[in-house]
Length: 411
Ligand code: AMP
Image (cartoon, rainbow, N blue to C red; front, top):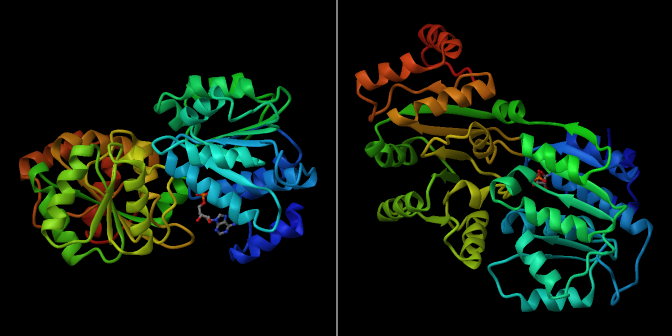
């Protein structure tokens, strides 16, 4: 399928050509026609699948077809709520890029920065508003934002909304929009509470599922290092010196862990920046910018601060701490291997994290290749414990395969 088959107008197609998009991604192929038919939609898709364009392009088309006032007096007709500021900013950038040749206007509002410049832009009038829930409700309370004309509502990353405690806010926001609006809900995973939310705010929705667990894990060369916790920093330095080339994102579970690792890497003369929830919005944006520009090669991040952000051309991901949530592992490694390129991931597992690996392998239906030949192995007793406690189904595959071809990768 080609973009021209999706019945998008020439103004939108022109910006797609400029972006050098060859053809629609799977989620775009599936959702764009349904959104143009004004259906409510519940879509399971992760970032990296092209899901922003999957809703942004048809929204631009729908709004363009029924133009509003030229400038002042514009009413908010499409609203996208996003759980994180970084993601909200990115979505707005996408609307601006794809809508470049339409006269539709978009803006983004989020917390952690001064509200006044956001008020000013809103008072000039926009067609599309991208917002994080807290700041949006604040602006609505102050009567700066009126959602009564919102005819398309997008709830993005619904599972993360849930994790971050935003569901009540989303329900409040939904009530302020037009009653007969079109609602689109996107989520990387579909836990029961997200389904409940969908049942509350969507009308007989159609379902689209392009879960990319398989896709992501096919595109990434995954390796696993069993290593004692105190030796992780040394292993990290060893890999950065000898194995990993190019840009790297290193994931840590805690803000404290991020700061500690950042200090250690700086001490070893690496150009590093970091993002986590305790950093101001401006500092997080600056870190992201300098990483995207290539001013620093290494970005250290916690999961929440980095979820959904679109950083292209990341050569490798290091899971410095294993995630206890298997889906998070897939999200993390999905930062690399994007846009048709292969990527690499390096996961550090200490003795107390071994059960996380079992759950991750269960989710992926495949094992992660274990690198045994490295300078900081777990002592043999702890390692045999690890293998003993691995899920038997996956242990079998690992053992036979690994013993046959020790160095062959088979992820
Ligand atoms: P998203 O899932 O929205 O975060 O998009 C992930 C990346 O894919 C972004 O860098 C987009 O610019 C890019 N992208 C979106 N649609 C396409 C497409 N049809 N072809 C190539 N790249 C795309």
